[in-house]
Image (tube, rainbow, N blue to C red):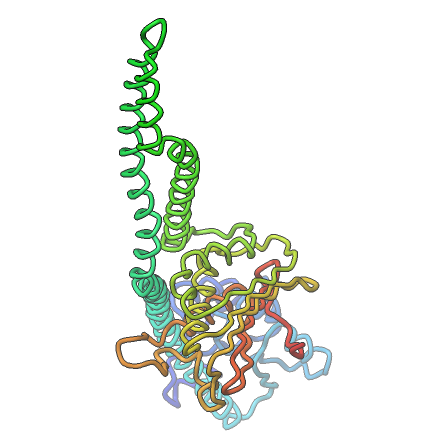
Length: 414
């Protein structure tokens, strides 16, 4: 009767005499709607419904239970099995057609959503892959910009570093030349002394000539001056080695992993490189506190300190003071770099960490120094705080957590 009713109204149907045959049939061809009698041979409608809803391929096919059993417990059992609707016997033809129409409409919507869900998933996957590529490219670009800014900082300091190297090289070369002359005089004196001492009884005239030659060639002064010249020469050599070592440490490509570092030593190394930028118009005051070692990327932090030190020097017009303070409180390390320069206007202060923002003349700044410094410190879980008063100077405070992971809690500046 159901078959006749549905076929007459344009639906294609197939009938089966048991639940087992239904489960076999859906493996070959998926229908749009399944109507099950509850009382059937081999397995009842509840069990068949349960199997259908447990199968990934058939769980979204609407299932209608058809029965003369109208008790509420039976209906609840059907709902628990996953049934989508019920038709009670004896049934009404119009009811059958309306319920069928509604369930088929729901099925079409489900199929539509399922199909487009797959399309959306594919699009999301493609977009995600594209975003991952973009993020990878951005990270690569960021690293390139970081290295370019670092090399720009080194380029800015190249003339000063060359001057720093020329000074010790100059007095080393001068001392070596003087040592050569001294050695010539010493050899002449020793030769004359040897001739004077050869006879068993030295000739009095030869002895006088030897003493006169000693005074003429200033042998006593030479003997005193040679140790001092050697000391200066060695100081010059050590100065060159220190500058080259710090420059190499500052400019090399960063190591992949973090490591423990002494921030006070990092500052000393950076100050050594920036010495020529600072020495002509600034007095540098160091007020280091006792600091535990910090897990960090030391070369990156050196770049931050370099940018802040150079900015501090450039903020001073003629003569001023740059003060570097460090302290340790709780699980935080504070590095404050202060200057007695021109200070920062409030409207400028709001933009100083934006990429490419600069108040320097064209060609004298990339506008990336503070932006990259801020990003480096943020990647260390820290932050840079700025306090400034126009005409009186500025203080940039770098705050770093010891573990390099957790962000800094906002605190009132002391």
